[in-house]
Length: 226
Length: 297
Image (cartoon, rainbow over all chains, first blue to last red):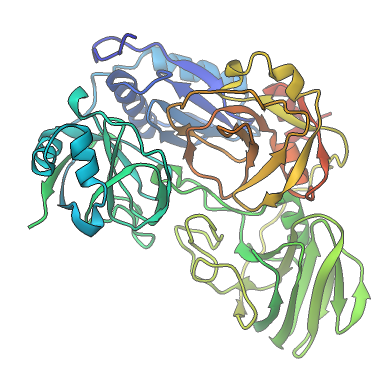
């Protein structure tokens, strides 16, 4: 399998309807650096200069969702406008992102899977934590639950599939690891990811505007909590 | 105005809703809002109501007006409504005064009913909406379902102008447009739109599980997919072949394959189908779905 890892290659997107009120612009079928960067860049260009009739645009891991109002715009016209935008886009034009440093308490009661994760990767827990924190990551997307962020990508030697079993609930602040990514739960959620630690950082405050602090494309680093 | 209601009995999953909390998908929050939007609008028209409703489920709801007067509009499915013990027709409206009791109990059809008032339900707006999101536990009354003993205050509110309701279709297959991953079901697509499914007893505001008695999806084996945007009406197929229609409190993103999406014009009708009902699907084009939304045949 060829991984589209060369960010300079312009990914060929597909435009497809998602129901009768949204279009999905997909930059790949599998998660890759190139597809994710292209989705983030396209979502930003739509946020900077909105398309008429589009009421909400949302970056996902490899796609951008455009919700539109069918009463105010024709599908064919909107698809054409999207195609023109895609043609004119520049995936390399991502402005510098914000940086978040997240302090994590690894292992122990709040990170019950740390030892198993480390041993699966043939590392000591300490060596795993060091390797984990050494990865230069960015926020790939928000999704699944309020403020839940996917962060990637870890190098190939830190790849591990999800757990076979799903935990019914892990608390807000849980730091999760699977599939070459680290994720942070901002609310209590069910998850099949490995729980490696906890943070006091909460990427969700329903009273704040906006309610989340991280945006797709932001740089993120993890460090041991003091 | 100012009024007060005391809930004396609440069926499970009774929630406060409004039109929905739109624009928050980028923060991982689905819009919620009424399971049957047309019925929500109708109840609002009847009561000249500002945004906001009590969405009831099949078990119904009893309340007492502690402070009145107020006007109640009710619609959605076919419930039985009693005002101080006397039966009234559903849908409809009633002028209520202090001390009056309302009892809504199950009727012949429907899963969701809407009670709307000529005053605004006084709960804090969260991200611009009072809709309860049962998945994220946001909005409504402390993010939770209503229960006996809860008091709701009604305060002054402005009733928006509503455009006339498009005539709903009440029979025939539920229409869908092919979904994000329809190409992953090349041999199953024809059977999906020619085989009846059944509404299971596992349904809520997040999703409706379907029974697949003919085993249309029994041998579907789809590898895990990259997580992607989800919208209400998406029909996803779980790893064990169970189809689930995602509803108003859906996950904002999901990794299961989606064969089709129920069109907006038919989603209210689908939401009202009771467990045990047979449901058939028919595919239409997006353009056709838009014609229906614009009130064209």
